[in-house]
Length: 158
Image (spheres, rainbow, N blue to C red):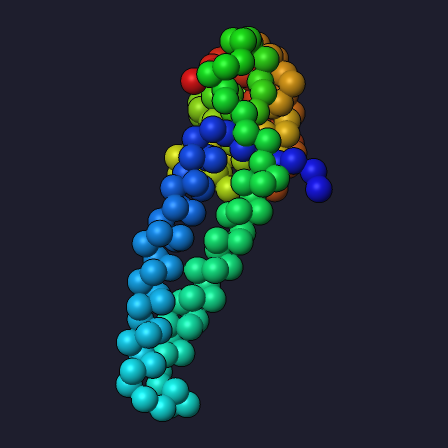
């Protein structure tokens, strides 16, 4: 399977979540299942079924995170030589040539993307249009509203 790019920050967040699920959440669920069993007949025991459902979700998420970390290509942007070229992990300031609106985005992995925090997926149309370009370049991005021109104002490796 192909390696998936992920920032160091994104990998650390997944590791923290994995630790929490394995060392805090899982033991609590096991305790809940044990207590629910003590209430007797499991056929009509809603607490037991709720706890088993939580266990299923927890174990599924643990597997999902372990799989993502196993296939991750972790990139520490601070170890790259600073450049004016847009790469995975870079923070890019752009200006819409039609509206003169300015935005700053950080290009991250799919799991880290959060548009509210201006973190966009490497697989988003904007990121795909920016990667490989340099400060001062004009790029055309195909958006749902049509093609939009942007100027790359600044590229930072934070």
